[in-house]
Amino acid sequence: MAGTTKRPFWMHQLVEYILGGAMVAAGLQSPTPLVPSVVGAVIMLNAAITIGPMGAFRVISRGVHRVFDVAVIALEVVAGFQPWIDLESGTRFIVIGIALVHGFIWWQSNFAERVKSPSVSAEGGRSTEIGRIAGRLVGNGVNAVRRPRGDDR
Image (cartoon, rainbow, N blue to C red; front, side):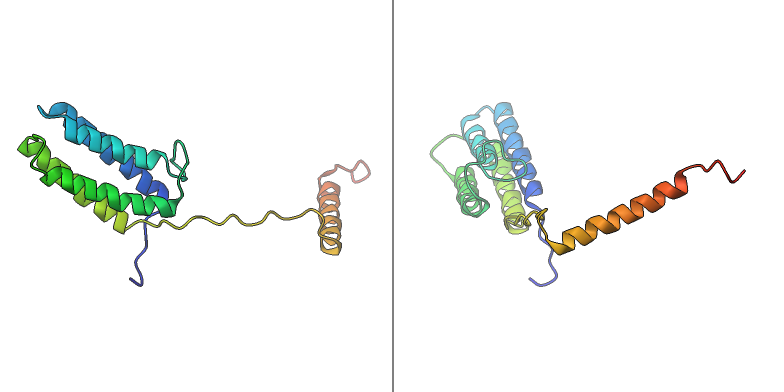
């Protein structure tokens, strides 16, 4: 997989919200709304509880979300092919299509957590003092150039 750039996690979450909303909308338009509406709600809930830029509740880590995504995609496939609950054929096609798109998005996403860089300490010792002196020197030089002089006229 060398050379392949994974998509950022915020984009993954955004697409999950869109897919879940589309699934719920398809359910509301269908004469058999139960399956797509429930599956759409599960997709959006999975995106909402994940710690990430677009997470609403931030309960589970991205690693756990990655595993939950596989379970949710499996649920979508089972919901699309199951014979027990009545599901209109057009809605069945939408459920399976969304499962395929969700699987592709999962495969192309970067689930790595960002590591926060440590903040710079103000107590840097000698290097901090040298930086302050250099800053003051430059500031004084700039101020000297900007100040109008009365004796040059």
